[in-house]
Amino acid sequence: MKHLVKLALAASLLFAASASAQTTGFAPSVETSIQSVLPRMIAWRRDFHEHPELSYEEVRTARLVAAHLRSLRMEVRTGVAQTGVVGVLRGARPGPVIALRADMDALPVTEEGDLPFRSRVRTTYNGQQVGVMHACGHDSHVAILMATASVLAAQRERLAGTVIFVFQPSEEGRPLTGGLGGAQRMLAENVFGDLTPEVIYGLHAWPAPSGTITLVPGSFMAGSDRLRITVTGSQTHGAQPHRGVDPIVVSSQIIEGLQTIPSRQMDAVRSPVIVTIGSIHGGVRYNIIPDRVEMEGTVRYLNPDTRQDLYARIRRTATEIASASNATAEVSIEENAVPVVNPPALTARLRTALVSALGEEAVQTDAANMPAEDFAYFQQQVPGVFFFYGVREPGTTLEQAAPNHNPRFFVHEPAMETGLRAMVAAALDRVGGVQN
Ligand SMILES: [Zn+2]
Ligand SMILES: [Zn+2]
Image (cartoon, rainbow, N blue to C red; front, side, top):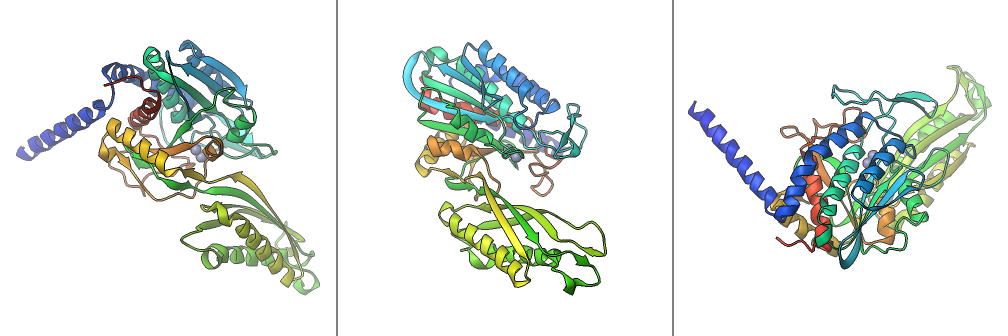
């Protein structure tokens, strides 16, 4: 019994401590706006989760976003990069222009689990019947940025500067049919109009502990390229391999050979690299050696300076291994995203703003990650910082949490409040005429 009382007391203290830490960072009027938008933010996220849309098909999402921004009396442009939406909030006082970005697309993943608002959407993707799911948390990004727009719009009279809200389509890679991904296409279509933001911020759901922000200076996320290799041999009987050239055996040698690039050829510390072959197709029958194998994969790298050298090694490894067996290998490498690099001084400034809004323990740092994010293209034009907000349910370990893109990827909804507070703090640090 005593033990239970102690536990309850500890829990209430913990709660009080976290509640007070959460209210220290903002002026009372901002805090009031945050509190009042929280239930709507969760409702928006559940609605987007239940109605996910694939890349460049975010029609419904974009319509809801645009209606919301208009209801806040913002200047709104739609159809930027097909389904993208841009809102401009002009503060009453002069000041800097900044941009905040959220991505809107879902993935061809069939949702598992029993959320009451789970997706039941089905589609045909790349010739296969699949579900559609917000398996990367972009539903929460859209809801958080909509809520940020509400909070900042309520402060319009006190804002010193302009905030551009960028709702981006198609973050999850370029279309299969070719063309640019969402960030590049928005930039190509003059996303900022005649405004020049001095900084851009973006966040991403990540299975770090709920209630935390992960902010990493320097290299943060990898560059990503799509690799295709076609190995051509000569078709023959499965029992007479010497009468042909076996592209299946050659392909297996190439796959092994490619693994020696990260492990034996690149500097493991300065140029970490991953080469993954994710699909391989060849042959129609067990006793026929086919004439062709096609494989596809992804190349990830953190150091842009060694990228051309990396490409050369991939080409040489594939073509020369093939040629040793009198086969040929055709290699094509297509850029998917450049690395996300957070400028150290900007990141340090953002850390100070986030620590004062969220408390010291909530703002963590970590190593770089090999997934990619096309936010990197915005960073090429505007100084920008990208960070994670943790969405892992309290009491679960990283091993227990489903990774992004998994059919059980899960966003612990209370974490979205931390994401919202981080976005608001990041913005007010620049345009915050609002004083405590
Ligand atoms: Zn993703
Ligand atoms: Zn994502």
